[in-house]
Image (cartoon, rainbow, N blue to C red; front, side, top):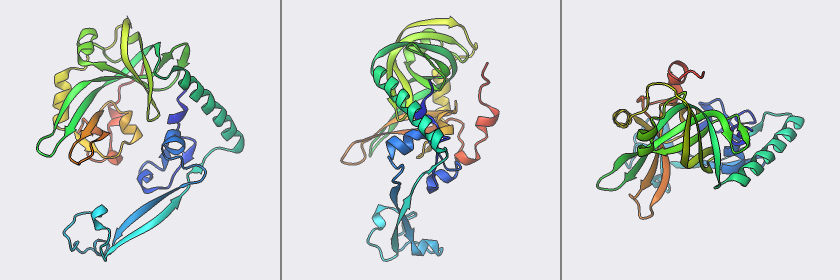
Length: 283
């Protein structure tokens, strides 16, 4: 079994946000999040005549946003895009069968407790951030154990999945990369990724690296971390990409979303060198 939602070999999209990643988009993004195949999607592109000519905004704004609507120099362009299918007709038919099998499997185990296990590939910190007008804070909630393959229930799962663990559990079991474990947890799907919650009945089958992830290490990394508004897939898969669950209370309506942090302090994902030189080797 593989995660059909995270496949990036089915569609390509020419939308500007995807250009830096050569137009790669996941099946989940196209078919579930945007639901833009085959009918395509509409979005609006904002322009400022003054800024495009190198002049300053008359309202002293630094970028184009929702407050620009109604301005004489503001232009809103409607753009229609359609993802490009990379598969042949026969390949697409097979893909749809595989997708149906995966979704049936997921529906049968979603929110249910199942045994799972495998070798821990690496460990990532899991943060919680609260944004307020007067003060904001961020704290370490726990960690994510990242598996590149393993088993879930009675199925062999040949794809990446994640396990959320608490700080106390980390101290107790001293999880480390290359450690082989078996445990029980609640199976969930989060924006196309398989994330297992509330693990218990933990059995360490084989010890791994002698170096485990420590709280101090995570908090020190956070001090020099940079945040991204977007969540590039290779950053989510990188051991130095940390996720924060954000509660934003700065507006009348409270918002909840996730923010991605680079714990190496890299400011531009496009120029990142980490995934090539510093990812842990799989053994």
